[in-house]
Length: 469
Ligand SMILES: [Zn+2]
Image 1 (cartoon, helix red, strand yellow):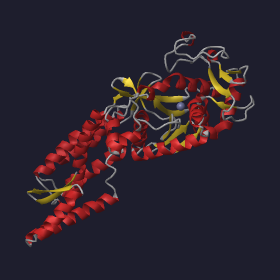
Image 2 (cartoon, rainbow, N blue to C red; image 1 turned 30 degrees about the horizontal axis):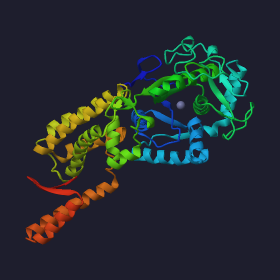
Image 3 (cartoon, rainbow, N blue to C red; image 1 turned 135 degrees about the vertical axis):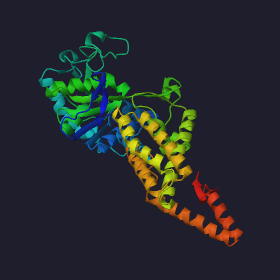
Image 4 (cartoon, rainbow, N blue to C red; image 1 turned 45 degrees about the vertical axis):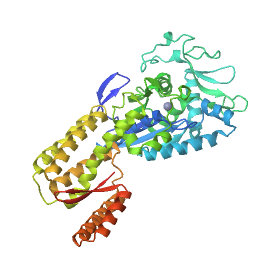
């Protein structure tokens, strides 16, 4: 099934057709490492991790590039408040970010591009924009983009240059010719880190780094640009203005995707509002996979209302699902060749991946995809209850593995877990032997030791089965 993507540029769902055959170039606005990675970041990066995984699952050779804003106003503020060097701040918080991303199974990024590694490209682009009359050097040797020279300004956000008057939410800088103009190069102020440029020492503006990085890697046009909704204006609008003015090629990006935000009881998550949740705090209370499940249990464009109660609810739902996946893993190794539950199970298995594909192809609707998975799990549980055979369960295990790879869930079912499952089966059978010999001391010892590890035993029609908490 063809993928359809809601394109913020056209404000409608469009069929996804990459610019170059099977190759997909994908860029997502990355982190400014100056504070802890919070749940808002996690939502964005988990969402686009699923996008990249699904594109690869569909056979697209996807190159996923993410920038790292390693010089910016907030980093300079942090320098002032902590007395630490800018690069020390960046490397510390970026390391924390990577650790969090790994825990959340966000493993699909190919390259993290640091802005300060692209100074040559940044300077070259600014020079090109000045040369073509799209940018001007101000009195203090900062460089600004002249938004009145770009006819497409406002195409993405629906804003018009003339609507942007001084005041309101627009920061007024006297050096600008027009309030909508934005900085490409900021002249150095005392004590700030700076790089050499034709205009004197300074640092790049935030918007120019993305186009410097993507034009370097992808050329003047690429397929997919993602980011959180709050970046749509002015950040992404500025990217389009810079790139299209510089290269003369339009559209700069074919599909613009924007993810919904994390809200806390109807408000945005902000340190200043006291409702700020670093991912590490959430990880102290919830398993990484529960958090990931919680974050993809909405379609990416939707907002998430964040609260511990909702996370608790997600945990219960995810535990149910994971229990079914684990039961299938255990049952398929000990089930007889066939069983009375096979017929219904096979019918469901033949259909589930088509339904999953349809949900994911509809603008990466992970919420719908999870609903498909829950429906399937219900059929699976029922089949196991009445007795499912090995062949049918093997097929079910394959279905779960395929879906798990795309969604990045159930990943603890690794080699190590296969070993653990095998050892648990062995212990249960040794305990059965002990009971048959009436060696109740040994059988109780095994049961108690397993209970201490969170493994409970239950009698079923087919003998004793173990269950992990
Ligand atoms: Zn960006």
